[in-house]
Image (cartoon, rainbow, N blue to C red; front, side):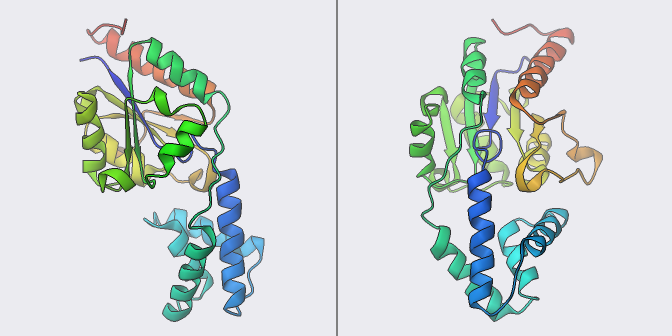
Amino acid sequence: MRYRAVLFDVGGPLDLEFAWEIAVDGAIASACGLEGIRVDPAMIEEASEAAVAAFAPDAYAHMIETLCGGDPRATDRVRRRLRAMVGNLDVFQLRPEIDGLLRRLRERGLKLGIVANQPEAAREQLARAGIGDLFDHEGLSGVTGFRKPDPRAFLATAETLGVPPFACIMVGDRIDNDIAPAKALGMAAIQFRGGRHRRQRPRSAAEEPDAVVIDVLELETAISALLSSRAERGTFLLP
């Protein structure tokens, strides 16, 4: 069986998230300040690293709990302030060159899908960035109701595309949300290392990505290598 589809997370591979992460970190610091908790950039970075190392499902919640010293009331108030500050923030930064890669993948006959923990509003962001119509299916959690690492999030997109899981390549930035669940379903998985989770590493051999990349050129090379590798095992190249 050849690979027939490439699935993408939004944050990381498609959206650089630089502006988003800067805004969130600043909002966390401000929200903590209103609670009387002094927070500086070094403390934010340390809390971020701790959240990633702990494989926290919600990195922001983990960061806030750390910065609040585990005080549940302070943690709850800071979390509510954070939601109020960034809940409607609209900052999408298209990764340079990713649109060209998406078009080339389509030209190779591959189907493209999204598997992302994003609200329905992300559809408009993708459309504004000029890449929304390049995807055959946008599997956003705000639409499907399935949040990664729930395997149903991946299966729903694969099923809609009409492609079995083992014929899919998943591209994401997180080991826990993207790589591990995709591998468990038999998908190939490429870790796009960057952003808050850039230092996240596999906890076992089962979570090892098939490739690790840091830019679009490396991503295209990795996808081509996977396509060629499967062809060499007795299948055939995409037209």
